Image (tube, rainbow, N blue to C red; front, side):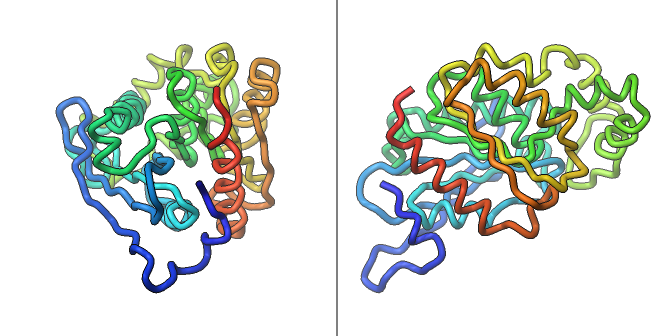
Length: 281
């Protein structure tokens, strides 16, 4: 179904050309700015739903193009209140939008319209998107798997800010930095939201819900945005006993934005998705 050797070459002449389909992705009555990069190939294809980070300056569209070239359809969208999508931005809506995107493409008529195999839907999220990918995978039983790249556990960061000056500085730099791409209802809304959900959004606590599922975590070893002691080690410690072989952790010698390993990360993501297309969970 996937062919990774096609990731870094253009389609041959005479082959049906891939395309880009723009749409307003339905989510709680809003139409989110979105596009589907459709792959070449006969029959329904796997769908990768890309979940970008906070606030979304890194869109990972080179990764999206690579996954499309390998044979996946790819959905990219902006959450409510982000980069011109309607509504107000909240972390709760990030989670709701990810969930609603899966629901939309699980509909038989929508899956048929876009050439999607509804049983082969994957999430690929970076940073905040990795947080949303893990939380969404934990909640649902109808996803084939998720790739979380440098996941940033916002609940853990909020909790750690209570006792660690170092983590408090990291948290403040993320949550209270200027955010012109995001439409917020008030200045402190994100801090207040994380204070409210500090306990129920902790990713390590999702371990029981992840049992029997497929998750790949990409750890970037020079990452200072989501440092491993807070954002990686607790996940591996909690998830490994519950998930067993369902958990894959891959390390890359790069920074939070994986700037020096773009091709390696794209290839690893495609290989993991390819290997899971035949795994029935």
